[in-house]
Image 1 (tube, rainbow, N blue to C red):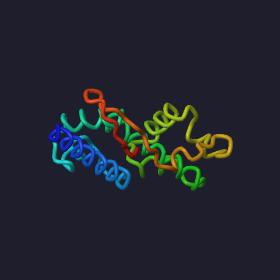
Image 2: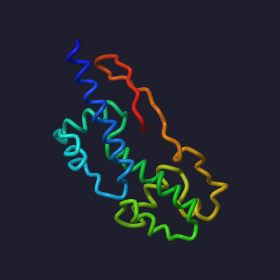
Image 3: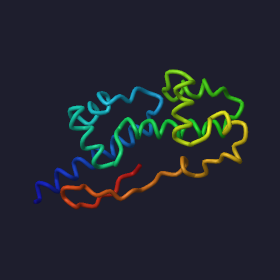
Image 4: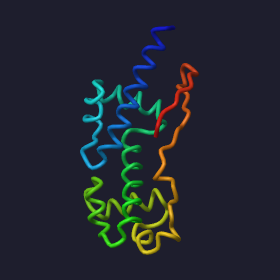
Length: 146
């Protein structure tokens, strides 16, 4: 039992470490291989533990965080080109960024840029959320910063 608790704490520390790393390095390469190297696990094991703990895959979290940062930048720097912002946050081109943005927010990045008050995302991307997650097999409640 104590062994399981230590293992759970180790995983949570690694997940929190990687969440901090992702938040601070959104403009860099955040591939599954790179993230798993940072926490010294195999990509398969890291993906499995991360998904169970956070409720989304590393790719989904990175994409969401990049879109939130890009939306914030669009609202703050309205004269800046959307293609420039998309490149800054790791998208290959403006078209892939636009598709991902519209799929996530249900309106286009250009409409947000044109009228940020009407399409305001509010404090959604500005505040860190705390989510309680349950590790399914153990029924253990954990707090993970998202």
